[in-house]
Length: 141
Image 1 (tube, rainbow, N blue to C red):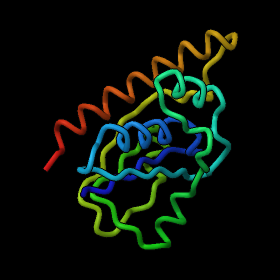
Image 2: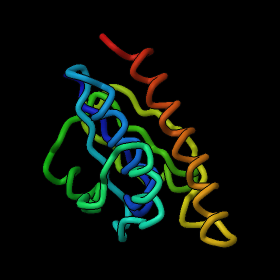
Image 3: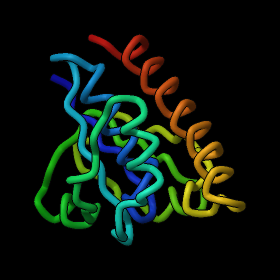
């Protein structure tokens, strides 16, 4: 089983979505966790759009990447799903085989009415799902 850690700034949206999709579709090949540099509060619009796709993340907690680091957790892959600036602030994980960077727009920075925000977050969700599915196909042992 390959362990994967998805990281972003607040662990409130992108990394949560990636974790949920990899755990749902990765079967017994992958085990995913997610964490943030500055853990925040789960984004309620992200919870809503994930529910539309049949995944309930409403009970998920935001976690600190530094706690994982201090615990000495080891991952086969560490995937930053935030912008390049934030990705550079992530700690080095000893024993980590591969670091990847999948830059996605930040759902918390979407603007407009609630309906417009939800539409933009759906696009981000669908991009993350697509990247996770590609990852599963490309990185199965």
